[in-house]
Length: 216
Ligand SMILES: *Cc1c(COP(=O)(O)O)cnc(C)c1O
Image (cartoon, rainbow, N blue to C red; front, side, top):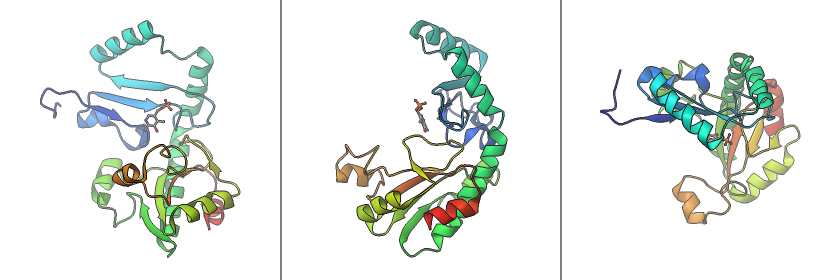
């Protein structure tokens, strides 16, 4: 199936993982994953993978050999170890993210919850069809009181850690305005939809009640 009129389509499937979405089935040419995230799943390995047809993977393999971007054996072992529990971790992370999104949706101090599992999300129906009724472990939300509220929120958490990465077995958060996107101007952040009170949460495999208790 070629739906792209001769152009090649590359999909970064890191957030969905192969448990929720298989882009090759929809006609993508290459799928890439950061295996640092959900595939490795334990924040102890850095890596990536490209998946494609034989012709393309041969070319990718050749350039990886030339440029040296190959994992060492221990990194490969850690990644395979992580993948063995991927289905269980993704199931649990999706359930937890839904519980977090539902909880946050009831709160007046949250301006907006960005999660495709919520009915009011503009692409809810598309996400339901494409991802088979699960919506990933990633939930993003806007604290109504902006930067100060978001910093206080981050400081107030007990079990959930501030971390640049995502997709590990523990729940982690990121506060882009103060971390990954702090070098941009406020206007540039606004253009990307990154408000000062925006928090990105990567749900892990703890009990939903513990996660909700910490953010409450
Ligand atoms: C982290 C991430 C990357 C980069 O992967 P690294 O393993 O950190 O180099 C690429 N795409 C997405 C969606 C990511 O989350």
